[in-house]
Amino acid sequence: MTNNQRFQLGVGVCAAAVLGGWWYTHSDTAKQYKTEEAQRGRIQATVSVTGTCSALLTVQVGSQVSGIVKALYADFNSQVHKGQPLAQIDPLPFQERLNQAQAAVESARAAVAAAKATVEKAEIDIQTARTTADSERALLEQARAGEREAKGTADRQQKLAADSIVSDDQFQSAEAIYQIAVADREAVDAQEHVAETTIDEMREAKDAAVTLKTSAEAQVRQAEGALQQAKLDLDHTRITSPIDGVVVSRDVDAGQTVASNFAAPELFRIAEDLSKMQADADIDEADVAQVHAGQVAQFTVDAMPNRTFEAVQVRMSATNIQNVITYDAVMDVPNPDLELLPGMTANIRIPVQVRENALRVSNNALRFRPDDNKPVQPAVYVLNTDGMLEARKVQLGISDGIFTEVVSGDLRDGEAVILSEARGRQ
Picture 1 (cartoon, rainbow, N blue to C red):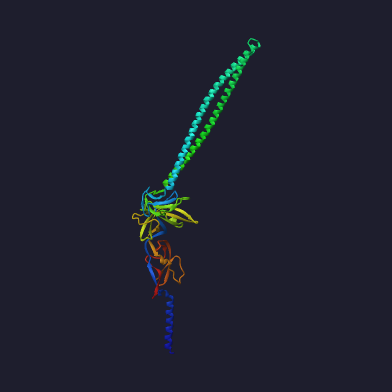
Picture 2 (tube, rainbow, N blue to C red; picture 1 turned 45 degrees about the vertical axis):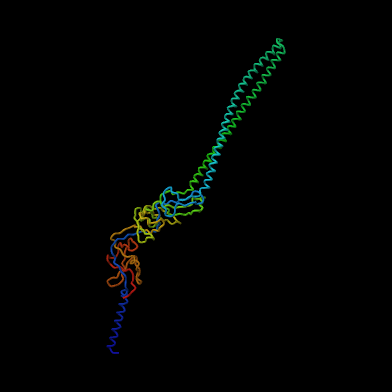
């Protein structure tokens, strides 16, 4: 090999080495990247939750009596008014119970009338017995006076007979008259005692009659209560609407038996006014501090994914399910065209923070990480003037799910940040 050939070979080896080193150190420029400029704009952070549309007032209509549904007067989506019949439970058994209760009331009232008559008769008997007792007492006083007079006459005749002034026959006659007076007095005394005893018996009879009357009156009240209950049960066989609204659910058919042994079975569900609805959503405890009354939320429903509805946050209440605390957020939703229906799933976005003219980058830029660089958190990547990847540390703010606010850091407005690596190579 000549010296010239050796020189050319050496130059070629050196050139190959230099080219290989350059390729090694600049291999990143052989890749293609998707980029997007960091620009200023509006960012609105939201809390996304899933809720359910419902009427402001939904009333469950049940049955307070058990029986067979004889007729239905309303169906799904029926417009009903307060007091309008919705269904009829067979009234015949309840009418029969009403008739029996009415007969029981009449029987109890008759028993009261009989008891009152017994009391009145007892009062008359007592008055008669008192009159008889008064008469017997007067006769007794009269008999006692006659006894005293006969005794005085007999005593005088006894003294006169002892002095032989009168004959023994006269004394014996006076003594006999006295004994007759004593017997008369004893007889009247016995009759007076009988009269007093009769008064006591009549009083006892009256007390018994009063007790019977009180019991009969209590039975009347009990029978009247049963009658009122029978009337109510008969009235309850006619199921009516408690409000003006729309029937959104019917859970009974004609001929079906409903039982209300433990709880009133639900027959209908009526929504009062579907032009004004509400959306109920469970908000996580971590997000609830950012949500407050008066916020305007946007939501969509699966039935109309391209239409956005607005709802105004009204109130929240905490719920505890298996030791997990969530907050039920209630939002008012206007529904003038009645397109929203109760039960629709609402995909709700509640705006909680807004930044105007904020420096923002795509969330894809925050997720990009080169394979051969140690991740820097948080950071975005750009291509420097030498075509090399360069990490820019940033402090992030709020995000709307697509863009994230850059609060501070090394990133400049308008600088292109890398979103992802392109598939093709140069």
